[in-house]
Image (cartoon, rainbow, N blue to C red; front, side, top):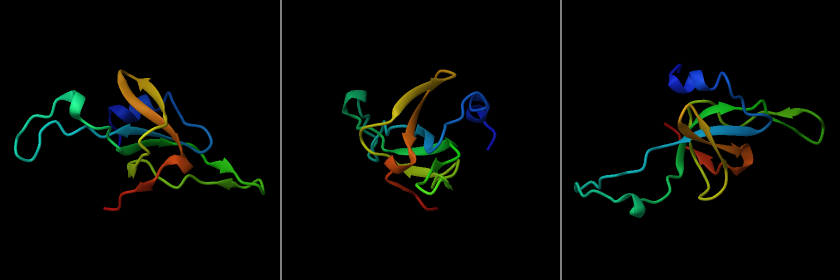
Length: 105
């Protein structure tokens, strides 16, 4: 999965249990063909994981791996995350525990 996104992340790697995601594009047209104005579009809660950290240390000192992998689709909370701009694209940084779930194919 070596795309433009892959090149940007050689310069940025999340630390510990952080996960870098790219939100999916908002729906701009309904199934009936009606255009949705930008103000009326809700916040997109689905995203694709583009980079993950190595994991957080548990109480016993062992590293607990991150529960998602690069390329997986995840469900995000409505609020939270840190916005990061890399090569003119918006990405969001979340803690692994903040991600609500992942979509199965």
